Amino acid sequence: MKQPNLRLLLTADAVGGVWQYSVDLARGLSKLGVEVVLAILGPSPSEAQLKMAGSIEALTLVDTGLPLDWLARTRASVRKAGEAVAKLAKSHNVDLVQLNSPALAAEAEFPVPVVAVNHSCLATWWGSVKGERVDGAFKWRSDLGGEGLRRAARVVTPTAAFSEATKKAHDLPVLPTTVHNGRTPLALPRVAPHDFAFTAGRLWDKGKNAATLDRAAADLPVPLYMAGPLEGPNGDSTRLDHARALGNLGEKELARWLAAKPVFVSAALYEPFGLAVLEAAAAGCPLVLSDIPTFRELWDGVATFVDPMDPMAYARAVEAIVGDDYLRTAMGTAAKERAGRYTPEAMAREMLAIYRELAAPAKQGRVAA
Image (tube, rainbow, N blue to C red; front, top):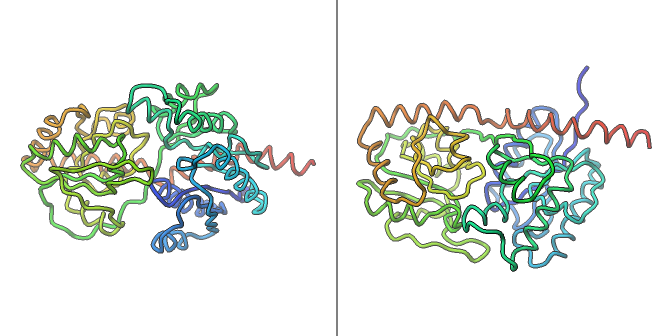
């Protein structure tokens, strides 16, 4: 017997990796018969993003104009945003809601079950980057995130290592479910391999630890190019003295850089998953990554791991790979093979199993009522 279709409200923003995650998930779900209402919080999507969303069947995009929880100035504004999303769920007659900002569930009553996906959070970032608990000025934000996670019908994280960190940071009664992120491989142009190192991400975020890579660039025999914003919407910023900044790259530009098979580097202190690493691996780039639990979980056996606070170790690792064509090719091939595990289709199937488990009792309850 064919399973009935589901209708899902999925929240996202157009600022960072959650956008790409949401679009890939929506595309995978549409192929499985799920109708998706994609509710955008924060800045409006760009024309390119709107075109990307418009290519997905059975997707309705709603630009809510609501504030992002991590940029909201007051607790009340987060509560109002959560209440507005709950009203959207009711007006669009969805079967369940997936919040990619769990804080939205902290003080709002939703008419259907809520799946909260913790892609990252202040409490775990603070612990990884600063080695301490969130201080008073930001505590209310962290508390809202934790309350939203506890009120959700199911909590999902992108790695098992981050699941453990989330449970500990927010004192959750149950370990979150792990569903690895998936990413559609970039369409690579035909480009000859070049000798350089490369990274991409929110360079302003101290969790990305761009400073270590910038210092490593001073001792590299090849250039290190860094793609991504140097200034964040929250006022944080970083400066590069040795690496070469590329600014924000579109998907086609990023594909052109990765097609040259550079050594992809990350010195992240905090990375719950790392979509940029997956994009590079799928392109066949050799990986030099910080030795943190999430990267070990995903890439152990196919990457070189380095102390994230040791610039010289990064310089030595990159130099060894660039100077050995066989090693470079072997590492790139191994990374690409591993990347084949992390697909949007696999992610969508696992999320759909969770949706069906939660939506079935809720549907039965509404019918009985």
